[in-house]
Length: 513
Image (cartoon, rainbow, N blue to C red; front, side, top):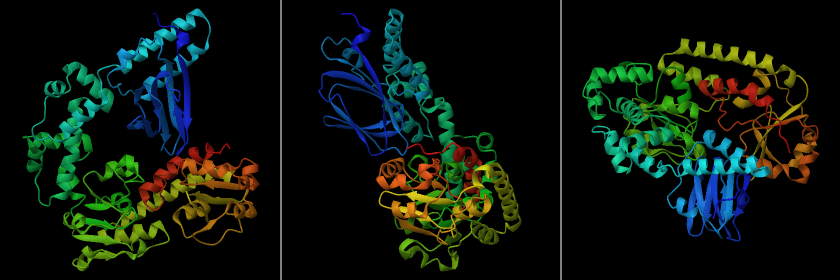
């Protein structure tokens, strides 16, 4: 039996966070499912799989696809009847990972060709189908590439050769290198050197008195001069200069990202807080701090800090702020002479200058403040047409509540209402936030509404309630919902990043109900 284009059906699917879709419910078809963006779970029979961007799955049974992505989970589905199937035998092995930039245009072209009725379109569809099958059945099995990555990470002193890695993956060296680069964006040697540099930074930062020669040996480089050249070429500074960033070993025991202030002052902390579930894709910190904190011991701020995690970094000084629920950290009881207690402050500059005073960088702090003030003025002028008219309210839609922010006592509110010229609604409360209902927001009747930090599923749920359309800003189409999950204006680096993104993101962020 020859393959015929009418045997196949193609559809695209978009799921918001928390929503599910049943697939092949009648179990009468075979399917190929490709995830083009987002993440979630795929349950089929007794299998529960991660549905991640770039992955493809061959399904022979019914399945449930569920989104856990704050943005849309987007997928393509190709289905064909089990009766008369000719493809199943080709799809017995796991399908290869392929990036959306490569696959999405192919799927779209297939979908377009399938909808057309001409003979040439049918031929084109079958040609594209074979091309896709060729790509997905490539030997670049993602599991083997992940195993190769772990082998490289765990054998830095005596690294495997490409031939050895290829043999472990049952591939030829050429095929393995091509598949590895497709997966990581680097050749095996480039990946090895990148991992060596990450480990080198951790060794330099966490081991007091360690020499460049000792580090070089531990990462598999016998020549310390070659190590220094390699480090400088990748990190922009020699190892000796990198070590000076932590000449005084400072640990941050806080639920605030005070490491932002330290790094902007040219100091890398030996330990600092992280939020693994909030920033799961970037080691528990905002992506703009991930590279800067390589080598730093990241402390889980989502639960009480563990004393050993801090003490093992041998800090000379600990910067501590009051912790949530007034948690008492026993590590501080024996280290009181090394602890600088930093009270909670209302302005990001207060943190900057107090930390700068501790480390002797006051003049650098002045330059940082001047630079950021200049950026704020530029953004204020750029956004003037948007901000000069209308009364604004700022909300955070959470799973169980809606927070309405006031006019001040928050770094973001100070930035919006003072730095960037947004006009707050005159009836807003003075400081902080209050938990409110949609009815209360409608009674406030803001001309413009800014939604920050909110997950798409919560916004979508809220926007489909009766009280939502009673808000003036909703009725007039003046609701703005920018991508703001990493916006943190409390530190200089985060504030700069936000100012760089803010103009373009806010102007494109009108919410469409």
